Length: 323
Image 1 (cartoon, rainbow, N blue to C red):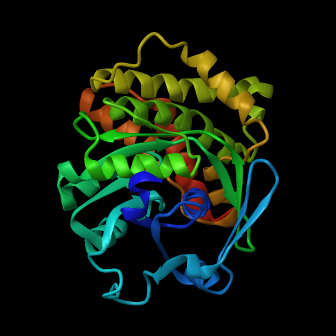
Image 2 (image 1 turned 90 degrees about the vertical axis):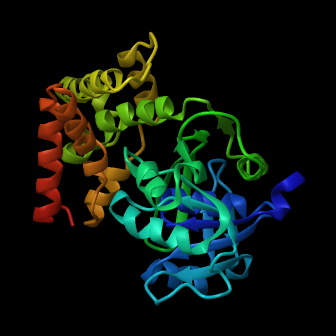
């Protein structure tokens, strides 16, 4: 497998997407560290990881396949501290400051970190702690959800697009990570303009996630209910205006057609934000609509649709209505 057997990789945050990453990497030669907390870490220690693949098979990955770290149980052990070549950040947006600190603790002096989280600002937060030259930004489009019994349901194959914050070719370690992702069948792609990729995913996230979460519906309802579609498009077009004003080249893509294709392909999915709302967890609304509003204010671009969606999701969070 080339360089993959020389890499030690830490997956920080073993939720739905983190579970897909950890589970698929378990089929490679990479040395793995799983960093979770509380009951999640306990489940990994007792059961391991149960990965339901898009093709319908079930993979039972035993606990001894990776070193398990419970981030709530004090300092990182010497077995892990300073030993990892790569830290893959998959946790929720609200956990990014803590995860950045953990990444700094587990990485070797030359190790790199990559954020596969939704929204804006995560890579910059990591860069503030580790330095821009050690950070990759990324976007993952594989679909997944986590059940209440330690199962990760990988419901749709996608891709991982990644690149340096400031562009350029992959370093030796980044090339090794690309190879591992390839070995894991995660369909990795290197990009010289990763900010474009992050913004393109953000456009879809602000359109789909908050509207479906507020309405309590699966993705396909956006097409079936015109009022929901109008709200989704309004949020998306505002985010696109902010992106272009930020210097992001979105090209000549038909945003409405692009959104329609994604919604049709994921019609039966409950988006991650709706899953969070249904289980009473904090959402990533601040890094999605909240980030669009904040950037829009800096650039003098009005974002009323994103402001409304942000306020409504925050209201649901605080009321615990669906918890």
